[in-house]
Image (cartoon, rainbow, N blue to C red; front, side):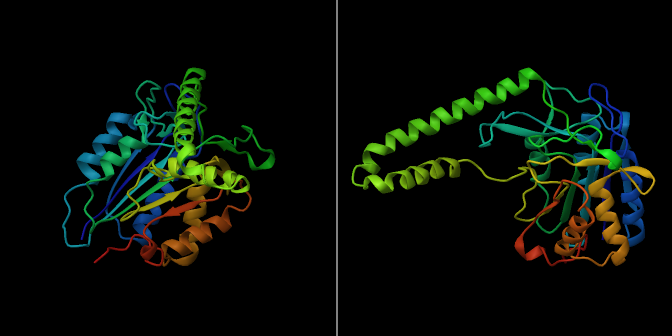
Amino acid sequence: MSKRALIVGINEFQTVSALRGCVNDTESIRDILERHYGFEEIKILTDAEATSEAIRAHLSGWLLGDYDDDGSDVRLFHFSSHGTQVADQGDDEWECQDEVIVTYDHDWDNPFRDDDLREIFSPIPENVNFTFIADCCHSGSIQRAALDGELQITPRYVPPPFEVRQEIKKKISSRDAAADKFAAGKMAEDLKNVPQDQRAARMRELMGSVRNSYRENRFAVVPVGRHVLLAGCQDKQTAADAFIDNAHRGAFTWGLTKAILEAGGELSHEELITRAGENLEAYEQIPQLECPDAWRGKKFLAPLA
């Protein structure tokens, strides 16, 4: 049996605003993994260590390899940092934007996209229990103020610069034009025998068929047909960097670790995300679990064999 974890926490960045709780998150997660789940192989990257190149190398060259290949392998990648978006480069996202994890040396011209993570994660064998915990923002459409009263909340989100936002808008306009063209082309054939009072509903069906032609996965990172994603918030929310229990922490990481400590580690994926959500009632974020339906009742970080 091999259990490995790569834990990344970034407070300081070369090009974007600082956070305060991400490095503390790495210590919290390491303590939980050692105390309750028997992890002995753990690597931690913080601040300047957590460059894009270093994270890629540790994922591909260390975390995701050397499997025993008997169903006993468990792998965890925990990432605490900012999140942001850039314009979709693969034309496979209906929202026309790629989600980005923000590394120490974040580069708007060469960001660490969800497409990059998906490429790294895709070769993981089906008999390996792989979990990705993302304590960062997947979207900033609902942003909070940098300081939220007594809770002292900073969003773990970097707003894209003007030129990136404009590129996303252009792609959305192009997408909408293509959808309109598709619907118009279908209209003459599909709507000629449809009663006038039913045409609006039929048009909605046509638009739905356009959307369904695009790959749909809210976070588009983990092949959730066989692995696990625990995300700190919904895709239209921000994750909080907050002052909790006399220290700066990621609210989601704190909510997870609190749930695990209270249960002595004996939690299924469903129980974990439910209890973490209950711990986050003071925060405007709803944690998300994506995994095969059959895995929701399986124990968190247990070997598949």
